[in-house]
Image (cartoon, rainbow, N blue to C red; front, side):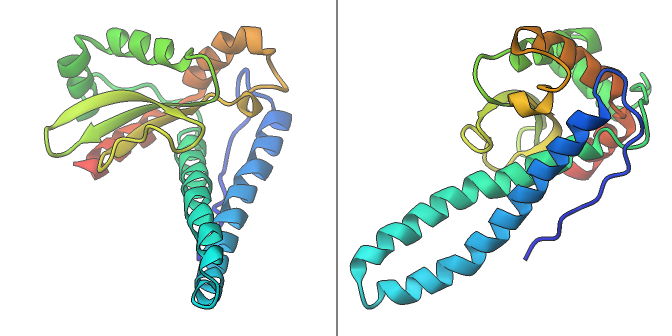
Length: 198
């Protein structure tokens, strides 16, 4: 079973305490649902031995598990990246060098990532590290789980569902939320994610 994490978040600039409070409730729901599905799958599998039709329910639970589990994990990356207050990415770090190598410059990476975050629809803008090729890659993930890159470690996760900013910005102003996220980002956490991924 998975444990709901707690996050020590400072007062954020441009992201209200109300939005964070509601967002954390949603995260709690993902943890709860992930654990409930894990309990239900064996129960449904036992029934399926007597009634093959029940196997359809088991299969559907497995599909739903991906949504709930990735919703849980994505949010853990998101909230951890806001702990400790804003910290800039030092230009002498390994991550800074890797961003320059793969995107041309740190500013180019920001432009690419922020543009990705403006993708229409609900989902996540993600920065991954691929250990096999040594590459950093950006990717849009639909909902919580569709489009995740297999075997790649998330380095940075930006929630672009409306629930992440609805108390602070209308959907037509989500670009302001993206800027607020980066103003509050603790790059030390992201740099550590990169180190861990290597």
